[in-house]
Image (cartoon, rainbow, N blue to C red):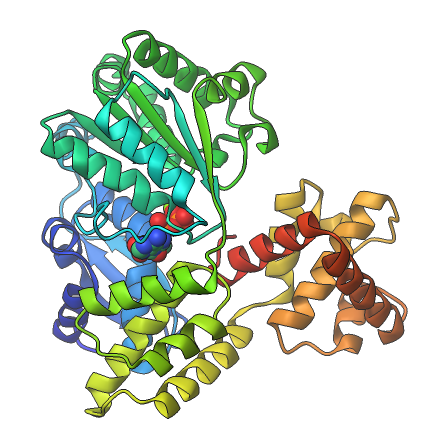
Length: 438
Ligand code: ADP
Ligand code: MG
C-alpha cells in the first residue's frame, strides 16, 4: 500500500476531526520483512503517543480493508529534536483540542435505546439536563463494546452545545498527563485544567487499579469538583467494588451518586442498532440480512459495527450488491480469521489479569479453587476461540491428557447452564479477547 492509498482509506474510516488534527500527519513507510509490523513516521512524540493510544485499531483496520492483514503498528519520530520546553508548550496548545476530543458522531440521537441500556441512557440524559445537581458522580459500567464511551461522549457533546467546559479523557490519558506534569514540574497547570471544568468525563476508570499516586491525585480532583458541584461521570467495565487495588475512599466516593449498568443487547435492540448504523453509513441491508447479522453475533456492538464496515468495504471493492450469501461468507471468514489471531498465551494473560491471579499459576499444578477455576475458563475459551486441539491445550498447560481437558470443558458447560453470573463472566471475558483487550 502506498502512503497515499493509506491516507485515502483512513480518511474514510475515521471521523473528520481525528483525521485533520492527527491522522493525516502519519507517513506510512513500509512493512517489516515478515509483514507483521507496519512502520509509520510522524514529526513529534506527543502526536505519535496520542495516535498510538487512540487510533491503533483504526490503522489496523485500514490494513485489514486493504489486504486482510492485521500488522502491529509502530510509529517512529522524524525531524527535529524538540526540547522539553517546546514539547510542553506544544502539549498545552494541543490541550484545548485534546480535551474536546469528542467524536461528533457519538450523540444521544445516534444512540439506540433498548432495555439493556435504558437505565444508563436515562441517567445520562438526567445529568445532562441538570449537571452537578442530581446524580454526582454518575458511574456507568458494563462489558466491552456495549456503548459506554458513546454515552459518555454524548453527554460531552451535549454539554459543549450548552456552552459548558468539558474534559473528556481516558483514565490512562489522565495518568499520562499527571506523570508528565510531575516530571516537568507543571502541576499547577495540571490542577487548573482538571479542577476548573464544568464536566469531567473519565473513561475506563478500571485502569486506576493499582496506580496509587494517580488515585491520590484523582481523589483530590474528585473532591474539588464535587464540592464545587461540578459533574463527574465515569465509565468502567466493572463496579467500583470489583476494581482490585482501588483505595476504599475512592470506592465509596464512586458510590455517592448513581451507578447505572449497560447489559448485552437483546435481539430486538441489536436489530435496531444495525438498522441505525447502516442508515447512518448509507449501507442498504434487507431485513433478512439484518436479522442474520443480529442473530449470528452475540457479542459487542463494536463487533457488529466492524462487520458492517467490512460488508460495505467488500461490496465496494468487488463492485457487488450486498446479498445474504456474501454476508454469510464474510462472517464465516471473519470467525476463521479471528481464530487465527487469538493465541493461547494471550487468553491466559487476560484471564489471569481479570481474575487477579498469576499467569504462571494457570500453567502450574496448583489446585486452589481460584486457580482451578481460572484454568477451566482458559481451557473453555481456548476451545471456543482458537483452533487448538485438546491434546495441544493439555500439553501447553502441563496437564495429563486430553480427557482432563474435555472434563474441564464439560464442567464449564454445566456451570454456564446453572449459573447466570458465571455465564456473564465468560461472556465478558470472551468479549475482551475478541476485542483484543489485553
Ligand atoms: P464501550 O465504551 O462500552 O466499550 P463504545 O461506546 O465504544 O463501547 O461502543 C462501541 C461501538 O458501538 C461504538 O461505535 C458505538 O457507537 C456503538 N454503540 C454501542 N451501543 C450503541 C447503541 N445503543 N446505539 C448505537 N450505537 C451503539
Ligand atoms: Mg469505551
